[in-house]
Image (cartoon, rainbow, N blue to C red; front, side, top):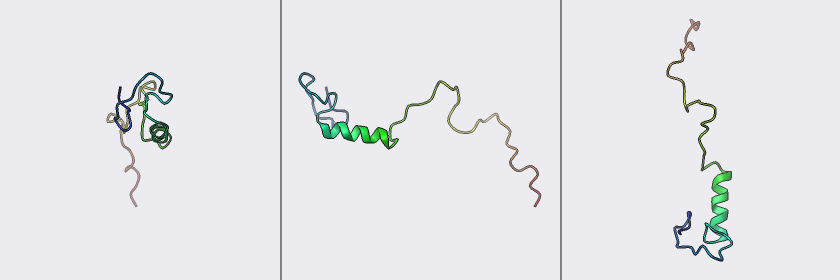
Length: 65
């Protein structure tokens, strides 16, 4: 198996940091999650990212200034 951070070959047996090769790579991965570099899509709400193409845009109406 390979470390997901540095891609170095990692033995599974006896490795307290698995699936990472070291504590350093484990902490790099944790930092990536905490800083929002990894994201899990929200599929439970049924909403798509971005604006709804079927929604009407009335933002320009009534702005006759």
